[in-house]
Image (cartoon, rainbow, N blue to C red):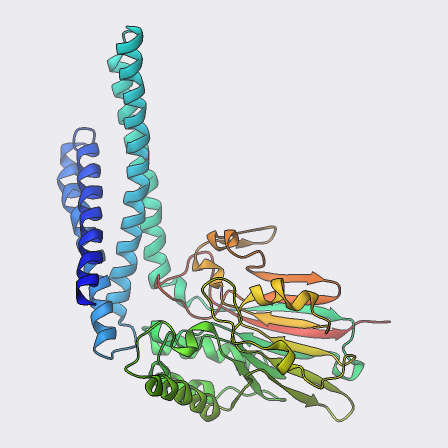
Length: 416
């Protein structure tokens, strides 16, 4: 196992060395010497920072430290920005080099004289522009890893529901998703974010999966904060793909099961009813509605533990329901065409890729090329799906353009 890590590390290191040498060669004659003396050290330093952050995180996990460190997160996140910047710069240099090759071939094959001075000025212009563009991801990641990841907000939606009983008109359902406790590096900021849930005055609180990255122990600093959340009709939760511990190696199946049992206990201790392919009824004294919770069901590499038929067993067809399913692919590939009608399905999982654009009239993120339903509100045949961009973060320790959110739904009984 250790040899495999050494091989991967060596490959990454070799790739970074080649990339840095290529960029250094590309800019050394076109950047003013006064500035290049700083740039030539910044190029390899950013790679060292990236490798150091990556290695430290691996080490911390291997010795049982499951919660993030703010210094490691910040420098690792910024180094990722430099890495992206270098990829952008390299793409400009490569385009320019290919252009030079074509000019050389054109000159040699067709015996035409190129105007070297004209090309030289164009080359300098292209490389200077590429440097300017390359600063964008650096500045973006500095914001993302310092402010963006804790820029919590409450998104409010009013939804008219065809089958909602009139006695439940105005029901407030507050959703948060993808907590990823082990990624956080500022307990106070997380507590402030969670406090927005109670301020939304919810009737029902739902959590739609990925409480942790891998280990139940990640949640220990946040148990009291979740315990303090309250709602008139209770708090409900489901598991996401990360909650099962499938992405880390346990010493035995029993240890993995204990991790799951510990997570179950955390949900109980914090007052959340964990729904594992089951349902529960909300009764206001006049009518009932169903809360249905399924385990994770995803396409591709993601586990399919969810069993919608088991979760809806014996439920009446005509009763209004809210379904909790972590992965929106479940709705896309199975639920929307299921014989049972699901009025409102709440999901997360995508994080909006943590990087993108979410403004009125325009939403974009790289994750849209993987998921058809990747963010926000969708409707089809009077069935509603909402995909949250999530509360926490994973991998890249930041957010830009995809601020962490809590979603407050106000449900209205649609007039007949």
